[in-house]
Image (cartoon, rainbow, N blue to C red):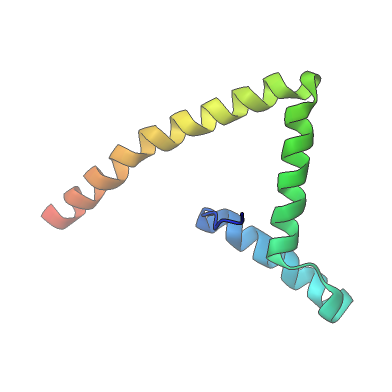
Length: 85
């Protein structure tokens, strides 16, 4: 079953820039953003299955989740502060 995955804007823009840089060299054979995401996910799964890399990957995941959760409140409060000004 396939699913849609959200990617932060800055990551998507970086992937789009990579695609554009490859498009001039490879034309229609250039990898799409979807191709790049698929390769990245395959590498993630390989790293997860590698016990040497799994601990580091888990640490990165937990840190990313921690930062994402801490930023969730900031977005709401920042928006409220800007409206109040």
